[in-house]
Image (cartoon, rainbow, N blue to C red; front, side):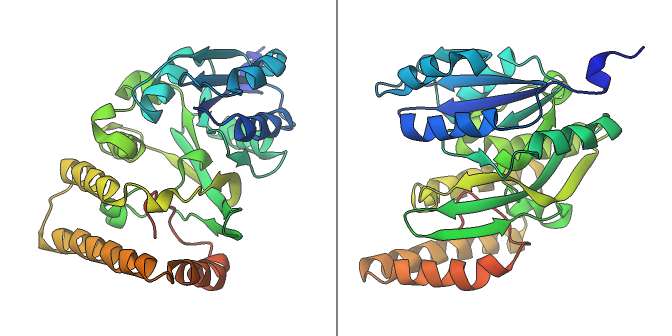
Length: 285
């Protein structure tokens, strides 16, 4: 008889948090609500000083492993989570993010069972901002021809075969907030069998938190750094990133004259909400 994991693969869910107790509890409840039972839940806290540890204590019976200590950023924390993970597949669901519905893990497991040689399964994400009353779907099948532009899908909607981290190493912290983008390119460029499964359905709900307004230029430089590592950086690519920087300054002017929120709400409510084919970039405007 085959091992039970051949039928019900163990999925490791890694949640990274720092001083975000209220949102962490919502994420924990999302994990608990999953109908799929063969899962482990790992929480990596960066040394929170709010009520985060109280929340973790309240739910300790459903948490497989947790630590609370200072780290060197979100991907350092994720690397710690990977080192603890025992699952066949790994998913990263940060505090404030949720699964789209209660059957996500069950559906992912069934697909991975049929394609257990696949490295990555990924799907759509529902992006939202309660502060700005925004909600829209994003994601599309990866087009390697334009992958040099940046991370095309949300990290929360990706499920990784654990063997990838054993074969390729963990996230490279030298690429800052774009370490997930670098890992994706590393996989596609170094794996003999870089099979990926795309499911055209939402897997996670991603909280925008207004992060698109923070550290835009720094993140843009990190994208360029990753892209240069894997692609020939010709004139067209340099021009593309130059124009993105110009666009940032244009939006900065809109903020100064206090019409940026109008622009942003119009863009997302009219255009983005209608499209399921938009990419989810950390620094999208």
